[in-house]
Image (tube, rainbow, N blue to C red; front, side):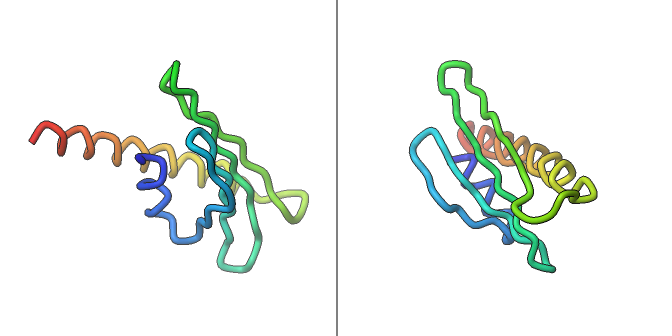
Length: 88
């Protein structure tokens, strides 16, 4: 639920496929480049692993890296806010 809540903060994200422990998402830039991100949830370790790759082109000027850094920060914020809401 927190992963999907975080994705809602990224309007350029489209969920392509999902299972309870896996999401495949395509992020589309304003000029039409598409990047594929796969999220795998490991419930035992309470960890989310992700892999990001460009669907078009050879170099993305670190767009994938910066997007995933932004995503990680946003996920932390969503998680903290959910924990605060649970306490109330």
